[in-house]
Image (tube, rainbow, N blue to C red; front, side):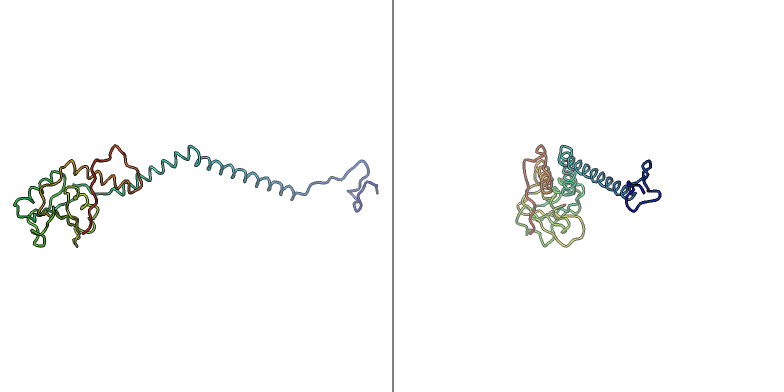
Length: 223
């Protein structure tokens, strides 16, 4: 045996001086190297993608996307908050609780000109006839609170607002002793615009200053 032959090797592994055994790296080690390389590449790609997302949402692109989202959310919330019925969707019954004849008819005609639907017109029920000390009473179902009653309230200053047990969507305007006339239509229109502006602010959205009305009307108080 040649002195170059490692101990324990012989046969085809015998080194004679002109021939050397061919030693190959174990295959399982190659697989481990390939697997490790794949993991490193995958982690690198994941880290790069994360950095790109951070850049999008923290840079100019993120600011634009965030602003657009806020604007869209504002528009959606504001629209829901301002879901007040239009005058053409409100039926008003006009009742005269004063001794002055014809007051319910003239008031109903004016409301009709302003777009409201008119239901019953006549003298107030005995419960209210000649018993309303102020300008009037707005009366409707609980469902009409902050909706139909609120819109009708823009037409008459100083009217009290109450609810009853009715299930219908119509509302009553009972004219009291100090009633003289409805609000000037211009003032009533501005009061309606104020309601829309207040609903917009309540939803967290800034209203357009150019559309801000000059006068404001408080929400009706339950009595």
